[in-house]
Length: 313
Image (cartoon, rainbow, N blue to C red; front, side, top):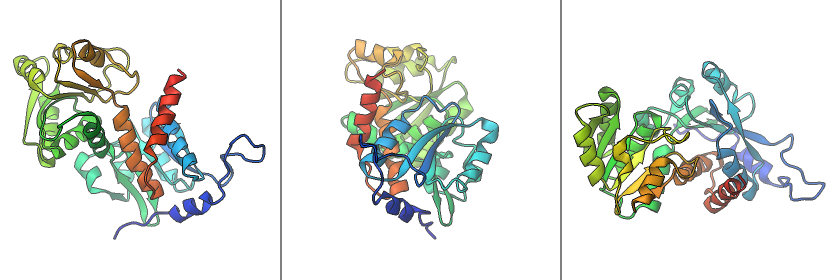
């Protein structure tokens, strides 16, 4: 049985005559009928998701509002359980809750089960669906930003939830992969996931070990080098090998704020291409939006809203 959308008709009904705050005194939004979509994270206030989703809701005339909700780890199950009582359409889930919400879902999509994490919740008549849109978002972003990315050689730094989604995306692109982490068992798990998703080859490199020569060779010969850790958000540098990319290579940082991390700055300085995580953010957001609304995501509106917001900082 495929769960049907709880309140999807309601969202459409509310959209008929949805009030817009366009400067007229009689038009105010949100209202008492506006239904929420939440971002559950700890912290959550830094996220750009409210900017892009609220712009999309307004553009499509939907009486929905997207709100960031900082949720301490010990209360996330309680908050997820309250979504239906608040008549929410759904939620996004970010660090550190992507695995913690798994048991709270009535249904898990095949994607969420494969990745082992949830980033999108959708309330339906049959219950709460947990999905993960990160891998699909990253594939959209890589295909947009990197020429001839299918079957390319990748290096992936990280073993957390973002790395799991990246491994699935790389696997589906048929990429040859080196997974870099501090613990061999965690890196091996990511490599195995990439193989299950379709990677032609997936090897493991352990930081601070005898694998350093392998890491140097892997980063020097890879087409795309991906940072799937939070390193760089506060100006941290990645391991030295990641800062020596050359022309023809691509540095891809899943961090999107700041827009240029030391990893990306070093790549650009040496003539390599460099991309931050904004395209992935938009890609995964578009898939979530389409689930909640049953409409194509207005990607140009979403991107423009984020770029305007970032331009005011």
